[in-house]
Image (tube, rainbow, N blue to C red):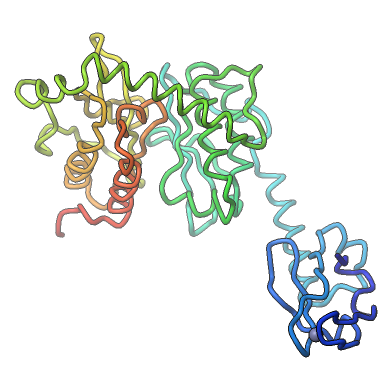
Amino acid sequence: MADYYGTWKEDTYVCDKCSWEGTGEQCTQGEMFKDLFEINCPSCQERLDVVLYPTIEESCANWDKVSDQDKIIVLAHEQLTKDFETKCLNSPEELPDVDGDHLVFVWDFIWDDYLAIIRFGEKVIWREPAFYEGYTRFREVAIILKEKYGERLKDLAPAQRSYNALLGDSFSADETIQMVRNWVGQGNLCDLPPEKVTLQRVEKSRNNNEVKSDSNKTTFGDTRSTQSLSNLPRLYTTKQLPEIKSDDDLVLVWDEIESENSPQIAIRYGNTIIWKEYSYFGCFNRFEPIAILLQQKYGAKLKDLIPTRSSEINLYGDQRNAEGIVSGVQGNIWMSRYAPNP
Ligand SMILES: [Zn+2]
């Protein structure tokens, strides 16, 4: 393994397979990975070594060896870092006071300015430069939000369009975000979310959910859905929905609340619950009909409908593809596929 600014270009390599001999500079570049690339024998393509890409610090320390093209990247990175440090959230004092004892914030993303923003209904709580693979920042911000809003903060839900920037190419990012969201909903400050996700803990929380779901099912699963079909109010026309005055994009939250001792689906816009109906185990089949009516009412301005962590047990039920169905519907909302024809 060679360092980028090391001596690999001058070093002599001998190919075990075809006996080619030459310097690292004469080798051909092989496959590239996130942190390194391979150099291969130019005659038979056998891999001879791997070279680590330089860190920013290494580039600065070897400035005379840095190519002009790389210098631009390093300087731009430094500028971005400086810019981020002046604009990023550092302490709970920088956050505004917010009313309400059931706060569900939306982690949103503005592509044009590459900004991460945190919404509560129409109120933008915070904005700062976004990162590619920004899920580690998601964790940091969640901790500061929790410091400020404490138990009142129930979820920090990422909007569909923030996912590319948040997750990037990372395989563990999605699980990290779910862990942080779990912690936001349940945790206290002494019990910080782990920096790296351990599969074991995810497994454990899934199992807990399953236990809980099963008990839900036996108490009011199937009977509730038939009962609710016949005599409980459901959203079936846009006339049941209130007007929302907002010039901004609309991002709504699919939450679950306890009301009159039974679980209810609550569609939230900040503190305002704009629709409420009975929930049941596996109610994901309500997600699309409700999404359609919401976009019929609010048009292309509606960009997302995001399930909170606490709604997921009943929403997904034991249907394996429910999560896929829900995120498909979210994609349709984002593409304005349910919007009325202008
Ligand atoms: Zn060879």
